[in-house]
Length: 100
Image 1: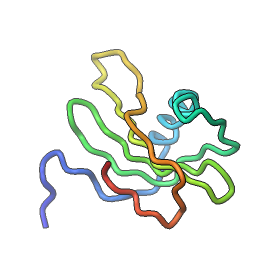
Image 2: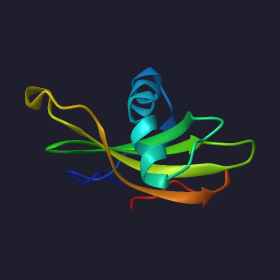
Image 3: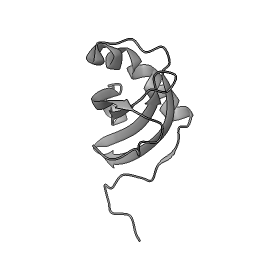
Image 4: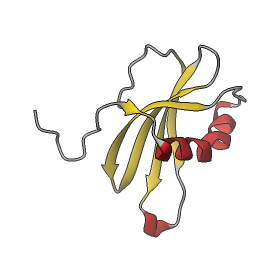
């Protein structure tokens, strides 16, 4: 089946680019969640090209605790960094990373 234009990619293991993006938004996400996470490690992701890129990332935030974050990275000419669009707490490693 062909991929639709603007559709989210398949799930892939987190790469260096995603690890760097997650590191940039850690403080913002902890502030929004009003919680400090003992672990903060990107596990897997999906991406969606829009007027920039949406990253849907599964992040390990505790021993057996995960969250899903939707992070928007604007186009380079804007000179803006990535920002947290939304997130879902209380996820497990088994939870599928879906579009949200």
